[in-house]
Length: 204
Image (cartoon, rainbow, N blue to C red; front, side):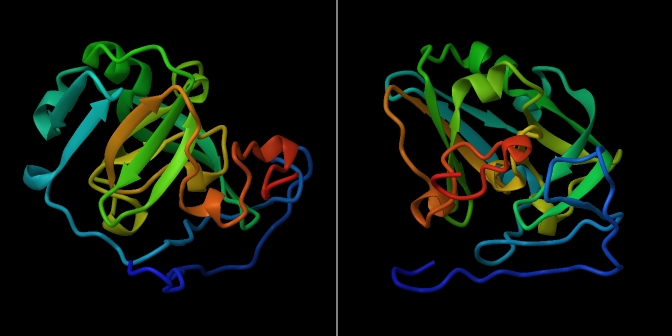
């Protein structure tokens, strides 16, 4: 995306929203659809061309599709929550725990991380949100490949945070001693994005 251009948001949504009390974070409604909201165009990446670079600025490790799978793929069933107020319950993903990736890469113990995407998207995440929760480098959705419009072939999934933190078309994870804001955070979104605290925008 060129400097000064407005982000293109693509949407795919059908059905009537249904609110559910107590099952989802405040301000959310439950949908059976999987809406598509993307900053920029959908990236089309064959698995043979995909790679993930993990670094702390000193140590660096690059994973291809096969070498990532060699770390051990797990199943994760979880709810996901979008800052645009929808929640989808009981989604099932396949992926490698981020904690296992960072450990295998020998990455330094730093407090902050920046996830980068093919296409230029970035988002900042606390390392503790990546390693102390169910965050995975996702390689599958509902037993099949992740559709490109939902971030395939590989996306970050940090299910306890709003979905903009789960970077689509994941290309890199860089851990750092200082925080560095990503695309939506620089546009005024919350630095962390906890749905249960309604941390949608800076100051929430």
